[in-house]
Image 1 (cartoon, helix red, strand yellow):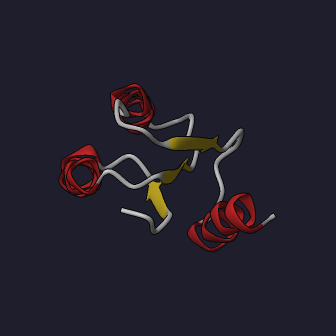
Image 2 (spheres, rainbow, N blue to C red):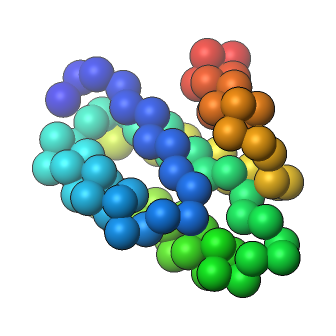
Amino acid sequence: MDTAVLFETFARPQYARQVFDQIKKAKPKKLYFYSNKARVDRPDEVRNNEEICSWAKEVDWDCVLHTFFSEENMDVYNSNYDAKEGVFN
């Protein structure tokens, strides 16, 4: 697949896994993998985000992989903006 893909995630591995499995089947040549940081007072989110971010190691096809893992938790609007900034700048 020649189209670049932006994969945005946040603490929902059950849904993110379904999407990521389809990305793996498509094998894009360029993948931007973004995750907003979990809220520190939510250990379930921290654990889930760590799981999702570890999936970057599963990229085993010919692909330029760019990972952007947020350093701080942001609201959904700023997180979405941050992900796009990582791709287009």
